[in-house]
Image 1 (cartoon, one colour):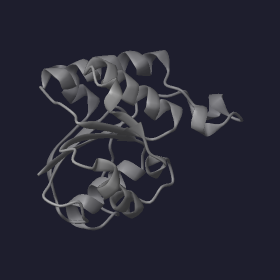
Image 2 (spheres, rainbow, N blue to C red; image 1 turned 60 degrees about the vertical axis):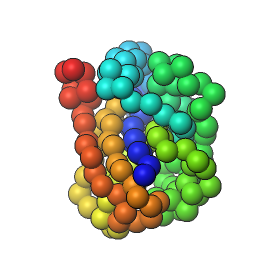
Image 3 (spheres, helix red, strand yellow; image 1 turned 90 degrees about the vertical axis):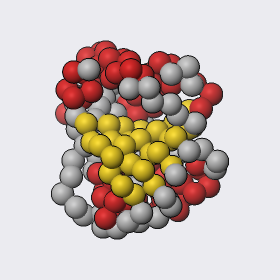
Image 4 (cartoon, rainbow, N blue to C red; image 1 turned 180 degrees about the vertical axis):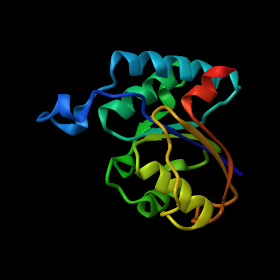
Length: 166
């Protein structure tokens, strides 16, 4: 059984303010960084653990993943994957994940919308077009018997406010 945790990056600089700079370098805001530190501590209180933290190479996702890795003393478990970049195909990610995950059984994936919601939908229903949206800094947990479309069970999907209530 694989526990797959899916985390959307924290609040980032607005596209309008950031343009015309490179989208891949758009960072978290200071508010986004503070929120992610609080979210990371809340995740730790839930007694989560990760064998692997896999992040999009885009700066805001890398920063989010680094904050989580730091909170969990897991910097050596952090890896980047182009298959998680905005515009990527969830089916392609699933194919690559078989290799990326290796023997890991508790995995955190950090990325972007609408990719993450499509990935959740694909893994749970086998269809990437189910109406679902993961909020910034939102966290989802899936249980997978196999890494293929339609093979996951949605354990929970939490908005940041739910994580921070505990």
